[in-house]
Amino acid sequence: MPEEASYKDFKKLDIRIGTIKICEKVEGSDKLYRLKVDCGEDELRQILSSLVDYYSAEELVGKVIPVIVNLKPAKIFGEMSYGMLLAAEIDDKCVLLTTDKPIENGAKIT
Image 1: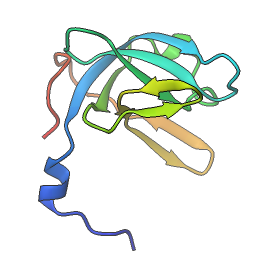
Image 2 (image 1 turned 90 degrees about the horizontal axis):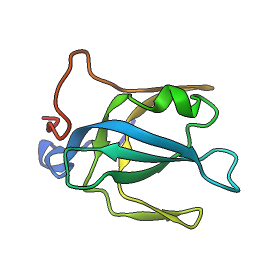
Image 3 (image 1 turned 90 degrees about the vertical axis):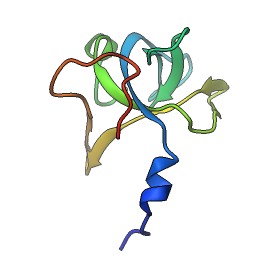
Image 4 (image 1 turned 45 degrees about the horizontal axis):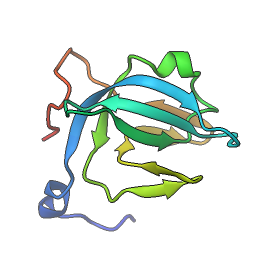
């Protein structure tokens, strides 16, 4: 059984809608993409994610996704990642979460 999280715990996460604008494979890595995501901020947000086995770079550009924007930055494969996208995984499948209707970048998940 997973550890329970309270509503207060959930409220600590700042999850925003973003659109993937740029996707490049991280040099020297077999699994990582460097994503530049428009989360409604002044600058694009860099996020590193292990999606190479599931999506081509071309498939990812333009996807509208939820992003945890207040996650502590992490150094991955020598590069900084400033957030985390949300995906569902089971066995050898992985799919990105997305919206069912258009909404502006920066919209807050509640």
